[in-house]
Length: 64
Image (cartoon, rainbow, N blue to C red):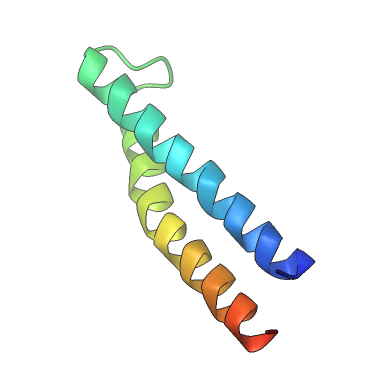
């Protein structure tokens, strides 16, 4: 694994944690940042998780 793929994988983990946290915040009924901001974070972090993971796997395979 290269540093670049490690960075992508770490970013994927952070985005996944943000998505799960946003889901918990929205399900609590009263998000600390407000429903709109939390929804935007959720909507952005879900595709970013997949995108960063795909980039990490692609980079790791390219540098084997």
